Length: 354
Ligand code: NAD
Ligand code: TYD
Image (tube, rainbow, N blue to C red):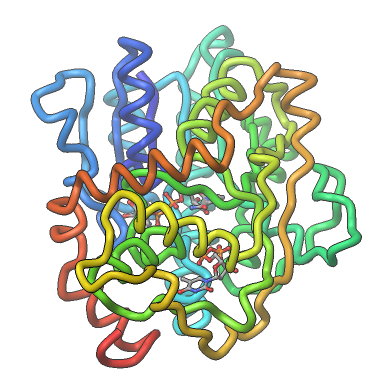
């Protein structure tokens, strides 16, 4: 069995579903079900005895100790986090609590659990920590993409809290011998992403006839990775990554936000044309920029390619087509996750009527 934390969120749910599609090894899924966690994401696993869901906090030491002792997982894959930069600007507290303090509690619970294992079990155990490329800071257009050796220069409360968690993970390896692996990934997109992140927000607003808000002039660049490729990379690192190492994961798909939004609008024009005619591009509005908005993220994924033979399978073209089609085919999912809490958030962020 493996313990997955945050497995009701966007990437975690995709990971659990992909895992159980490829392996019979059961998953213990621990998730607090914050606004971003949704059991609807795991509906395809209903009745599957290989999936055991527990609602709880990675900061709950008593719960962790009980779960680890009872289920004796051979690995932990830690997705649980507060993950939205804009939310971290409005309220950093939850980011400090979960991404730093609760990650420390999780690491300590794992450390105590390791002491109860025999030497062979301990040698085989892995703690895989899922992190972000945002810990490296921001690139200018002419800079080389982020390598694992880049210094940490986080700029937002979110990325600072993830950087802190990466440092704790590293320290629990060097000081206490916890067998850790860390992955630093670029922007993900795909099915099940909560519609406050750029791509699902644009799809959702476009179909609802609402404005498509682009921060600043839309020239900020991200390196987009299809979530299924990210999940495959994590499985590969878990299986064969070298303990104590970090692996950057990216899609080799650098795009400006405006290019991304244009692509989504063009796909929607093709697959779900506007009733009144014209293009969804007409709904684009340029809004006040995010404070401290990082200019560019780009990943050098040579290490994971050379050491572990991982490459992304999707291009941005193929991945975004799948993604747009998924959202069009799952209007019920979108309706369910766009709850009252979601509406309150979008109103605060984008103003009433957004
Ligand atoms: P998400 O916000 O969609 O999901 C996070 C999940 O963690 C939710 O299900 C939430 O309920 C759960 N959670 C939050 N706090 C918790 C706690 N204290 N205890 C237990 N569960 C808790 O995030 P995501 O986009 O799926 O990201 C998953 C991980 O990947 C995060 O660590 C994030 O930093 C990292 N990451 C995300 C991206 C991206 O583009 N989405 C890119 C790189 C790295
Ligand atoms: P986001 O999906 O929030 O991811 P991150 O900030 O972690 O990269 O945003 C992706 C990019 O899109 C980022 O440059 C901010 C921009 N953006 C907009 O222009 N408008 C929006 O409404 C949102 C949510 C993001």
